[in-house]
Image (cartoon, rainbow, N blue to C red; front, side, top):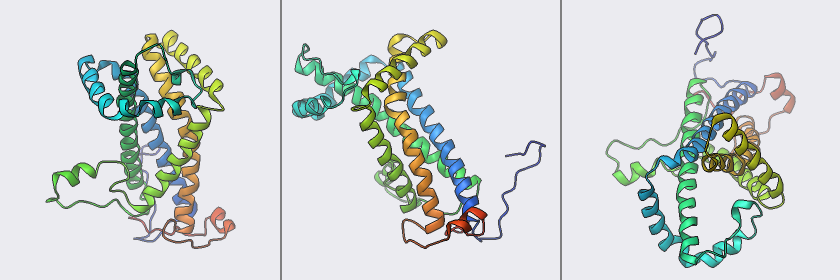
Length: 271
């Protein structure tokens, strides 16, 4: 990483001494913002390009998911779908149950895969930025080389092998994210539907997307990523709590004025 005049950027440290709260929060928040951008690009990109997956694969997966996870609980699923007011949530009662269940299964498989990929991208980008900026904190647990294949696979599942700090930041981020999502798909459904149509039209007219591809990308962006920006704001507050008050292990008080003027030191040494 270089400065505008071509010299390497150096983040000054003093051995393993902690940086100021102000600097630590600023650097980790910057990294978190970059991670959120990576997450958005991956999730929307995965949905946009999902039509490149062979239809035979999607149909086979959808049938299995439908029979095991959807059809036995279809009435309950559709009962909750009725609470969602956006256009894409409406239940088409003119179609037979098995056809509806298979459609839900296909949507679940495609969108859940995109969401998991986006969380993985956000985690990877955040860790990379914290390492680059030398932000202090607890690292995720590293598995020994002789760990079982199952443990190695599970270590890549979001939240499973993360440090308590990282779990706290992501849990608050995603919790607020889901709350905003629930609001925008119920009380704010009219706004969400209008935004989906507007963004879809832009993608079709400006980038030449087909209507189906544009609708998928726009729906993912407006239904999932717009609420994510609200969650991101909550994530910034949690990052402040981590460095200023040593969350989640304890609450160590620091004066707000000392945080602002840069004299308060982060609760975490540089790692």
